Length: 400
Image (cartoon, rainbow, N blue to C red; front, side, top):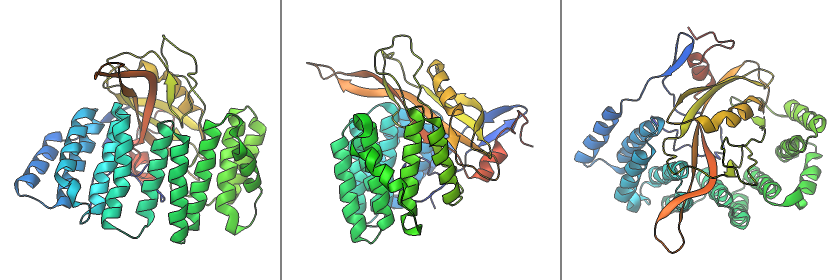
């Protein structure tokens, strides 16, 4: 079993899968991080390659090293390790479709965090291509890959491309008898329309119709519609209507191990040279800014508690790369989130990277950073039990 899987976890997985455990430990009242033994993982990969290990073992060792490098903020080295493994194994997808698709998924994550957006978009398609090469019958793995393609298209500003990917997903899921996936794809398309079309177009009306559906057969569709509308109403300042829908969702949704994010405030990145149109939403994470050329190593790991009532407290930076002055509005926005309720408090750890895409300058082959900065996100949270044990106690008391 692959031990290190944070980077390979699908961002839009169809099941709730906890990320791999991290070495976050308490030391007095301060959270410290135990660094990964990078040399051990380098040696493991080198030994694997020296004995001409099979593809799955190569990928296991590659992902272990890549994840350790990522957690230490060494993004470019992690990308190089993954790209080298892809070069060795891209032709093995028919025999090892899942390991090869995992390599492309990690490539997508790393490329987005660094700013190589075109590379990330192409790698998202390669995830699905690798799966199709070795698993002709579409299943949950293909569905997840199609969700990722849609997400990547939307992140690159193509609503049409995202819609096309979701329509293809609906056809494949319906043919496989997965009506639940069909509903999720349709809800995702409406959510994208709300983001891209002023006023939401027809999406708002359809969501209102779905929110009024009753019965167990319609529970997934109705709950998804109510959640989308609750977020929309809150962003519009209609807090009472939003809270009413959140309460309705809490009554009808089954409790799960993961805390569902119901709402997150918009925020602006901290930057002096500001341009127009820089409101940020925790979902879109992009804004127009005049950004510095040296934004390498601009990452932070953020820890916070979610109380039983779904409110956030004790937001703090657990560790960081270089300058983190951009992060204050983000931390404030995290503090204003609202999650689904639960019997006990839970602790979350999340990685955020301050970045922007590389674009080619006019009349040149040189690539420079776009003035549109953004924050990339990855959930580093382990299972609720592990995270809670590793976190400081609410009120500043460390774990014992």
